Length: 157
Image 1 (cartoon, helix red, strand yellow):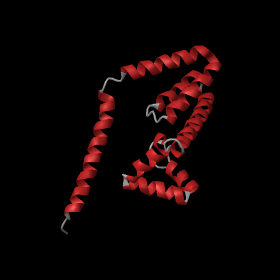
Image 2 (cartoon, rainbow, N blue to C red):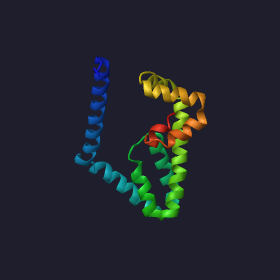
Image 3 (cartoon, rainbow, N blue to C red):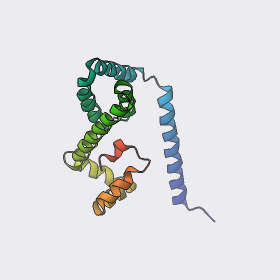
Image 4 (cartoon, rainbow, N blue to C red):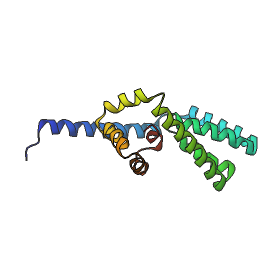
């Protein structure tokens, strides 16, 4: 039972990562995010005044937010249900997430490919995911969607 020095460093990095993650989540509750909330509320109000033609605007903006990895897309998803009702809101969110995810995927495979490869190469776990997708793409991508990783991160695979 002795702990190797390299193992201690790994445990320390994991503990530090966990602590930073907890701090980040806690900061979301503590920090004043009223500006972002006001902007989203203003957008929701604007789309609501447009009626059903606002659905096109909603889908376009939500798809862009998904494609650009905006992590607060849950606000759009909840707003869709309130504005258009649950069944129509689910349909709109499904369309916009599909468009945004596809755009993110295409960006990750074309314009941002070199950046994604460099980011993957510097992180062993991400590099492993990238290599596995290359070998068994469809199966691994479908399984990756079941992971706890946010979907806005998965889009750039």
